[in-house]
Amino acid sequence: MAMAAARSSIAFALLLGALAVAPMARADVSIPAGGIMGLASGGVDAACTDLIVTGTMNLDSGAFVNVRDVIVQPGGVLNGGSGSITLSRNFTVLPGGQYNVQGSSVAYNTNCGLGGPQTPIPTLGSGMLIALSAALALLATFFLGGVQRRRDTIRGVGK
Image 1 (cartoon, one colour):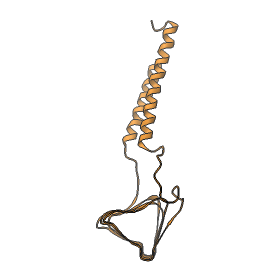
Image 2: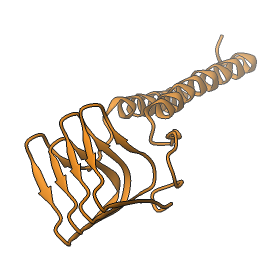
Image 3: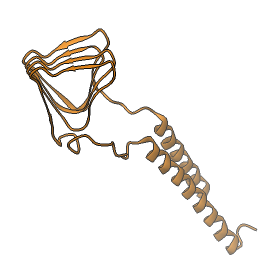
Image 4: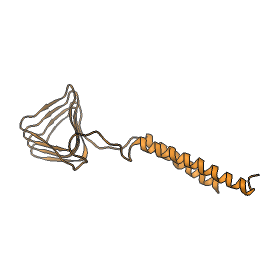
């Protein structure tokens, strides 16, 4: 009985370890190199994902809302026009990227976490925390297995 419980605990720990190395799913708004996107007077709700510009993004008079981070990659061009971007964390223009402000605006809110630029805080979805949980589960399994064997030896079962 104890052996079956130990095996299931080990299997669970291995499953957690496998999940720790699996990539997390994300669906960012991305304009690839050579791609062009124009909002005209439309709007995009990014649902707390990132806006990554490697091609050309024309805000025109449109609006991007609920953006977590804006990242203009090298070779990317973000033309502001008279549009607006509302984000929760960082607006980054990497060397070789361009942000042409024109009449556009950038505002911060807390819809996607803490407002303003910040350093990301690890969450339960982080691979390191899952790996740590798996290691602790393995240690607990080995410890509990050792306690059970000592009890059996004291009772005279293990001789």
